[in-house]
Amino acid sequence: MLFKSVILAACAGAAIASPTKGVPKPDADGKYTLEAPGIRAQFIPFAASITNLFVKDKNGTERDIVLGYDKASQYENDPYHPNYGAVPGRYVNRIGDATFEINGKRYYTQRNDGNNTLHSGTNGWSYRSWETTKVSKDSITFSIHDADNSTGMPGRVEGKATYTLKKNSWIVRLEAKSLDTLTPLMLTQHTYFNLDAYANPATDLIMNHTYYTPYSKRMLANRGDMVPTGEIPYLPKGDINDFWSKPKQLGTNSGDPEWVGNCGTASGCAGYNNLWIIDRPKKQSWKAGKPSFTLKSEWSGIKVEGWSNQEGVQIYTCYWNPNGEVPLKSTQGGPASNGFVNSNGCIAIEYQDWNDGINHPEWKRKQFYGPGETYVWEAIYKFSADK
Ligand SMILES: *[C@@H]1O[C@H](CO)[C@@H](O)[C@H](O)[C@H]1NC(C)=O
Ligand SMILES: *[C@@H]1O[C@H](CO)[C@@H](O)[C@H](O)[C@H]1NC(C)=O
Ligand SMILES: *[C@@H]1O[C@H](CO)[C@@H](O)[C@H](O)[C@H]1NC(C)=O
Ligand SMILES: *[C@@H]1O[C@H](CO)[C@@H](O)[C@H](O)[C@H]1NC(C)=O
Image (cartoon, rainbow, N blue to C red):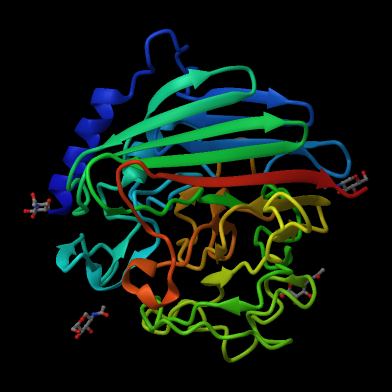
């Protein structure tokens, strides 16, 4: 089953990997490079991924602060498939027990994460090459045509990812349209950061990165297998998951008894792989006000601030990254890293709606879309460096 879907994904990729007529071809590594003042980034059609993001640190040295691989071809043959910089789809995160219902009809999706579906299974959008439909100096668009039942979900869907660079900023717009029938739609941009680009001589981990989410006083409670129970607890000040009361280093609570199992008791996951609710002030535009997250590293001085129209954010602190197996890019590394991305060596920050909302009608989230409706996901990431 796994084998079959991998072959299918590879064939689908091969069929549509080339850019639309009139669109330039990528470079020898398979990448497209965009630029704007203070920022340069590279992208590939596979999973509509960002592969490199260069900004200046506090000394003015350029650092590549996202995870990825040197060559586009490495993504297609990657046994770990960490969704580096990818756009999974058509429905991200976990689907509890790999099933859901629409209007009394039950659908079954692939069990690729214990009993559950993760990121729509191994024929999801992050396992496929998208079509490159538009490229300019500072913007690129990838498109995908998702067939009926390609991931066990009904109807055809058209997806689009547009990435634009502006001064010190990366702007992302994801769109999806269901062509035939009601179907689950929920996307994310799955970028992993290490704001030291693994060059910090003291540590190659992100435990000393500081994270702050001022609007996130609630989160989804989970079963041991990280499927939401439906409960949405408030986070008291000082809780292991409190990043709202003040900025906190990601490793602050690593000695607490709650650390192991905080991101899944069934698997013994230690650290973070959870979804926080973003409760922006009502009527406040998503682009206004404080950033919904800030991530900062003291060593490089680099800071990223995020704004999004989404009302949730998942962070994952890379507990599952196997030590000494997943190679760093040639643009990253230094004396503390041994050339690999190690456990706790990165953080994925994924804006998205409340995961498994298709199985929690009581939350009243909009997660099923039909013909004539457009799903829109937007975010702005702004970069700076403290002197
Ligand atoms: C899957 O579900 C079955 C039946 O409920 C349960 O016995 C089993 O422990 C579950 N497996 C995992 C990995 O959670
Ligand atoms: C959908 O795909 C699954 C797995 O690929 C298959 O088992 C199932 O029969 C398909 N359903 C329909 C309605 O085609
Ligand atoms: C880095 O993080 C570790 C683990 O959380 C902590 O013990 C240490 O004090 C931190 N170092 C700095 C310089 O903040
Ligand atoms: C910045 O420059 C100082 C002085 O040369 C050096 O000690 C420090 O390691 C540099 N920091 C980074 C992030 O390169």
